[in-house]
Image (tube, rainbow, N blue to C red; front, side):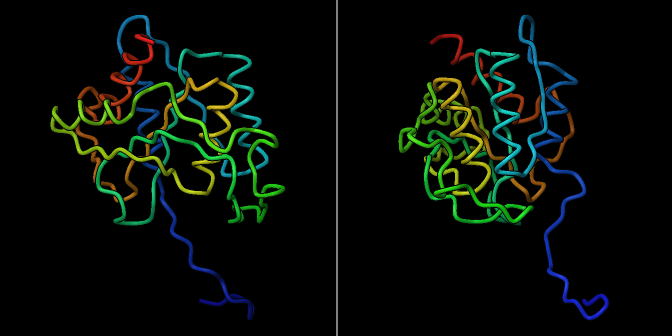
Length: 195
């Protein structure tokens, strides 16, 4: 497709980002008594996303910051991926505004990698026994997902968790009370409270 002689690139677009839809659904039905939910859409920007994350830690200061983002391309993920580790280096791909972080790094002088205080491996085993399609992962990728996760782990001293929901639409929403993202979030918050 061309417009005025200039080739247009083909970009996968989603009318509704499944991760944002999941976050909004959680806010609607809640997670139970004494659990407050604060949702914030994080921009696809290496410049703006740290501002949102740092602002959240400074103003809300949650027990845990649960990140839910769309993972992979079409058909690459079937279940929910529970991410253990955020990495500080390797951000070479430009984001939507064509920006790439200085030195391909999230936090200058920060650790090479940070892990969540939540044992995602143990959590994934528990959730699989419940019949959920979950995948334990130590590689969030080297794009905004990992960048945001590392930033949150750094500023929250490990009190962050990250899940990728499939872009494929395989998590069709019939009932938010039984939605896999809600179940994963409840179990993550429960594990955090035991820390």
